[in-house]
Image (cartoon, rainbow over the protein chains, first blue to last red):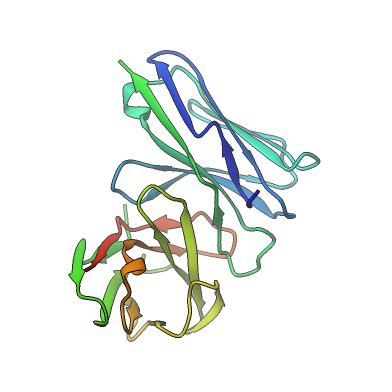
Length: 112
Length: 113
């Protein structure tokens, strides 16, 4: 599999429920980031977690990182219809140029 | 809030033609990138640019591609002789520092016919 693979590929939930997306990666990293993409738009940065951090919160977002398992999860609590989008994890794959390698993404649909 | 702007939003070209995609990164950012996303697929890294030179490029970024920062504000991607498989969304991104979150433009949809 490739660097930054998300699971599940698609997720459909009701408004108010929590959504959990997982990401696995292959190489060592300096940090892992999550981005959101609305249909036909650019990616928007959500949250960054460094390799020496295990958990980070931002509003309704909670990100965990397990470097021993090379995996991360993004939890969106109390989802809203406006959270409907694709979510991507991205790693720097140890690069020193700042480039990010993106996963395939999870398409989240939140039904009102 | 400052943003990355890309023009045009949609470009249609014939196979074999040259195209130039334009980007204005955030003014105090130092690191610049181009990515592409074929419809329904993942976002793929093309090239990173720092200090007026390419710092890293992917296998996709072959001799048909070039980047330039001709002045203090614009950052361009040129495809010399487009192929059908170059049809994709092309995203420009900039970052303040290595490891910083990237700010993306809304992309240019390139259609090669």
